[in-house]
Amino acid sequence: MSRDKVNRAYADVAVGEELPELRIPLTRTMIVATALASRDYQDVHHDPSLAVERGSKDVFMNILTTNGLVDRYVTSWAGPAAVVKAIKIRLGAPNYPGDTMVLTGTVTEKRDGGRVEIKVRGVNAIGPHVTGTVVVQLPVVQLEGSGA
Image 1 (cartoon, rainbow, N blue to C red):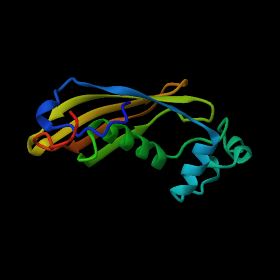
Image 2 (image 1 turned 45 degrees about the horizontal axis):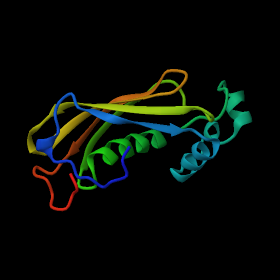
Image 3 (image 1 turned 180 degrees about the vertical axis):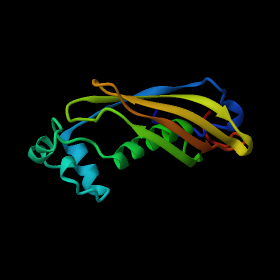
């Protein structure tokens, strides 16, 4: 995904447009640190032996981290002028350390007021980790100096 800060304008986005793929390496440090940063102290997110005792193969990512990564994915594509209006996600297969989550997205709807709906999917080696939609409000016109 490009690191250029491009503000996408509503008029320049088409239904069916594919967002660039984003590959996120899932490290133990990331999983534990993001759980603690989001004040999720459930042991299954930071204690491997207790996670196994509770039926998991290892610690796994919490929903707040997944939600944040989905937000980051869409806003990196949309640009800093985009405003997230709604995120609806459903979790599936756990994200375990040592795996990679691949996020993909497709513009599924354009609504009044510059709002765009994007269908998002995040997959790891086990299967779909997250599916859902994100609604962002984009500038109606291209902003000066946005680089697009």
